[in-house]
Image (cartoon, rainbow, N blue to C red; front, side, top):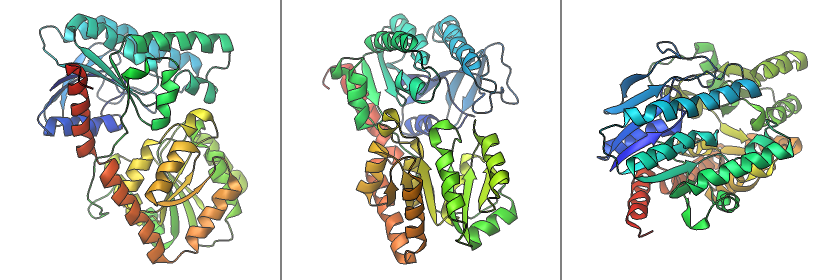
Length: 411
């Protein structure tokens, strides 16, 4: 299958779509990417790239990438994000049609994180190429705008809702990342278009061997302490306040360490809280490339995932859940809804409600006092569940099957 992949985010930015594109090509399909200049999450155009002008490059096994100019997201805030979103729409509409000229594709496929507006250039490509348009919805609009505090005005939210309805109306297939998304998206789209298609993770060797960028003193802490690792974005949605409050309550566990791997809008706040509260059991490790994650995961006694308490987050399965399950380590999940259901169904760890500090403390203490063999059993159960439900090779094959049947009109 020949796939025109439209996404505002792509390598060298770290998203699951990078590995999915490579897996599809390894399975014999053609993927050509139409994206912007990389700038996530720091908000600055990556070294080696220029915000202005179009460019082309190749990624992995012959994946051609077409890049259009993009206004970087900067330090965040409504104005910067709005200009970032609009620049992708404007430049995608302006340049993508020229970049597909003379090419033949079977489907236009959109990796749809925030913003949903990233679908707009793909709608034009659908009309220009006269091909099937499928979008993969991993974030709900307008719900996420309200839940993160980005927009609170009910009239603006209503207007965004009408825009979402129009975007969904112009698509042929809507894939959604969790079962709970089906009902949510049905408020704005014909339910016959909607298909559950989960996120996935590329299985990697379960080893922490080999050279690493991680400082030796941090590796020593991981090897000699009871370390709980959180990996990923450190933003408002991740309820990092709950993590810090739990760490403060757990200072009586002398060898307990909470290691936060990543960065985000709350990084400064975390650093200040660590200092103000004297939280020596919290380590802010900073960002590391994806290939370093096995070093953290395999040394950790458990992996933690958390989100804020909101309906939209209860409908979401955070992408890190799949990577945690793949690692074969116990999971502590401070989540509601779908994410909690996956961890419980897998038998992979301990679960408490979102933003429940008492519950999170109980989970950590429970795992701390658990026999090592019982902790290992949780991790092994999670890995089995991952191989059955979220392994990328299987999910890539399923994606092609869904798209082909939708194009043929048999799904």
